[in-house]
Image (cartoon, rainbow, N blue to C red; front, side):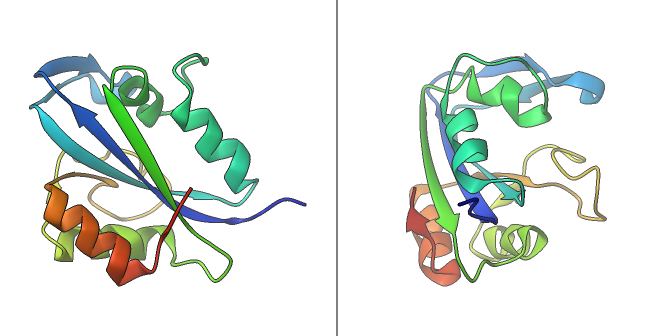
Length: 134
């Protein structure tokens, strides 16, 4: 059975990093927690499992970050999922700061799907969106 849904991926960087992010160029990431919101209409388990793996072909903007992150944790919105763009708005309303304009949102009108977030804001987002640990 293919589970369709949305997800939030939290990534921690212990050190500042400059990461080449495809057409977005080289982006600077300060140490801290970053929150990426995404959708997986072709399979939640496959998509999130891929993100959590450090060994993969570089396909999406987020791949460049997941191979560089020191720690990652994923939460899912399933079966009655919160739409991806709404998760992004929730992340920002919980204190997330847009990290890189155009990141992960080439198929919508959002500013970004990547936010710098603190631990309290991450907990607030998980609670507000009713997310479950992946």
